[in-house]
Length: 386
Image (cartoon, rainbow, N blue to C red):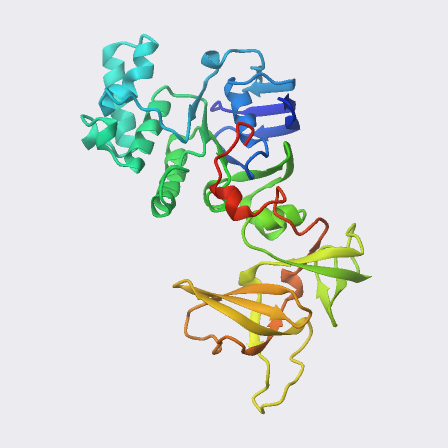
């Protein structure tokens, strides 16, 4: 059975404040697992505790069943790739990759073979004589990965390794990174604040807030079934609307009041306070004509609310439509540019269909995960506890 099984048991780390707070986590061998959250949520500190760069205040770190809590970093069968690749500028690509093996006293024949294998794995064989200054950011990232993989770790820890790259390169490399992980078959634990990265690459992910894991599961489950407004607001784009729960049906179904409209929701009635938030993803919002074919204003069915188009943003394959509901709140819809949509312009009256199976009623405040502007947070440099 391959190694790389990680278990965190009641793991905590306090600096001045609590950075990691009583975290329990199991990552299976060969799994691509991501820790996702904003700056200061504790994800990087968790990674550093696994790597051995920090000592926990309480709890345990187990690797393949062995207690690593007090084992020095250089004695753990893990390796780390940082956002800053820290390649040696005076060594060529081959020598950079071979450095760790030489430091371990591995024989020259084995070094040549292993370095050649990992350079081929990351498609950098033809660049082996270049120095880091002669490589692009994406190429340097591949060399940093090769340098980590050549030591054959049971676990590879990745701390925002794509963060220094431009958006287009990140999109292509995240696909390569997932394919690489599947080929080598070792456990990847990936730290990121980028929701798209976590959704695209992860087998499972955990969303963190204030040192705690608030939800964990497969990407599709967390995206479609967020536990609260924090997760819904952080993972992807969500429309959050303050509502009053007016009726609780069987199971999780309920009815809510949004302005003058009463909407049915299939999820959220159980355990949700009377004053809550209805959540729906932009791609699930449906825009319909306000008037019928006869030119009359007619109710088009349940879960429809009147609205007006405020702004259109062309995104190429789709258009982002900002809408103002009659109740006063703003929502956005994502309309595919497939030639089949209704004509929309600024000021167009429409009806918005919020389907019950797409509408979730959740507890929590409609704020960003740290109470700050998310775009500002994402651009900011992460703190040590990040």
